[in-house]
Image (tube, rainbow, N blue to C red; front, side, top):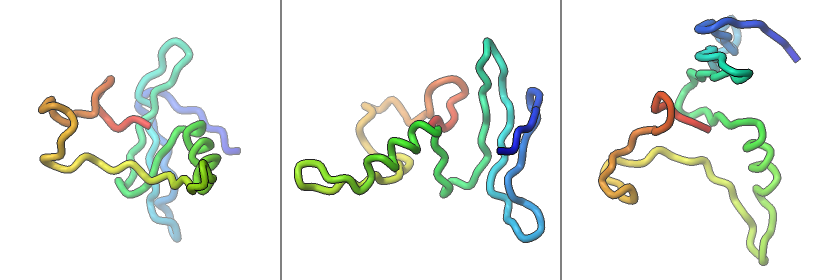
Length: 101
């Protein structure tokens, strides 16, 4: 495991050198009370999950329940005009309104 030290607003880039396309930029957004907020700049087609969520996806994908196989699909952004929010709009919510996983 590679371990790096970063300060607020400093980033780490994954890929992006000869032979490797830029895959991901991770930026330290906030450090407070023992918690670190990270920002991920990545192509919208690249799935990003918290580790514990990824473990759950792997654990249930393809498993059989009541004779039916479970398939975990990637969440997709809400389309324009899509219902379900009662006209409240489609903001990301939460602190900063960004994508949260």
